[in-house]
Amino acid sequence: MKRQENGRQNLIFRSGKMEILTGPFVQLLTLGNLPLRGPILDEQLVIIENAGILSTGGIISAIGNFVSLRTQFPEATIDLIEGVHIALPGFIDAHTHLVFSGTRAADYSLRIAGRTYQQIAASGGGIWNSVSNTRKASDDDLLRLLLQRLEVQNTGGITTTEIKTGYGLTVAQELRMLKVIEKGKSLAFQDIITTCLAAHIKPLDFLGNSDAYLTYLINELLPLIRFESSCKRVDIFIEEGAFSSSEGRIYLQAASKLGFEFSVHADQFTCGGSRLAVELQARSADHLEASSQVEIDLLGRSKTAAIVLPGASMGLGMEYAQARSLLDAGASLVIASDHNPGSAPMGNLLMQASVLGAAEKLTAAETFAALTFRAGAALGLIDRGRIEKGCLADFQAYSINDYREILYNQGMLKPVILWKRGVRKQLHL
Image (tube, rainbow, N blue to C red):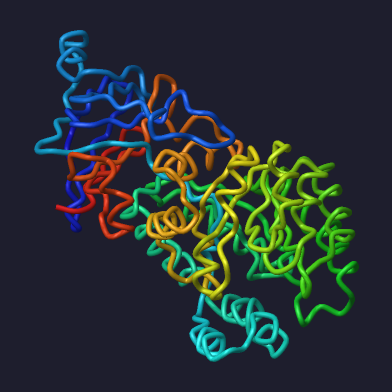
């Protein structure tokens, strides 16, 4: 094993196929044996003290007491952790819009002065503003900005990120965004899951109604994506000013026939999208700020994950989604950043989750589950989000001796080391 140092003083350990024993950690939160749905008590957390993690080829092969593992696997290369640290799985951000150019600070100023999201959009701001700026940007600029944002995500402990298109809104521009994301995949430290959100809004320069635009996407864009890219997911914004549930049903059914999985931007300002998501068995219904108890109960009885986006509530000055009620109804609650230039420009996933947890009375176990294995399952990924045998060696370390400090510091406490598939990256010295 060789230790390499780049110009930013990031220490990276290349694991290859050798056995790597990482530790010791004063506490290891495995998040193993926790349910995929419903409430979780902190007493259900599995915490191993003086722990080690053995990985082989980027996959966890054993966990337990560090000294015992060192005795049991004497040939393993030691990735020594000096000082006091705790470890937990890497976070998974299941909903972002990281490929964009430009700012919507003007929109924000209008919102805090009293204008609504819909009013700003109707006057040419909102999503269309980001579409215009993104179309003008070069591929190199979009890639550079994407990599900067992904690096910031690394510093927040994120090892898997979902990224949507949706600021192109033509066949050529959406394919361009997908190509930028593909380049980002080859350069990023974390894994990237791509989603096509060409059905974000009907672009102002499209000559036709919403039905015609979705038909255009079904006939012209989705077949190209299906056979010419690695993107296997689509999304649609079901909302007044975007697309109706009846339009969304036709679009998602067509996408499903082409082999796409899908999620739904649902119930952000009005209800309806989550019902469609449950009806069509979408992977997830995302936003849910406007969901009533009827929609919450539907999600609680379904296999569709409930992804809540507290950053959008903060950015728009709205109530949070009813995370506590969703859990109590039996839903699989996921917390994601919604990092985008308009409603959620902050992008600090851990801070958002910490503040939401305090507001909605979530246990630490529920919050960490919503950032890890439940988020992975919402993306169809069951190989990450837990520290247990057979999972990816994706984990993070904090310079503390009590895991409860992480949420207590509300996003101000950052991980100091990040591992992706057994590759070590020093974040903060």
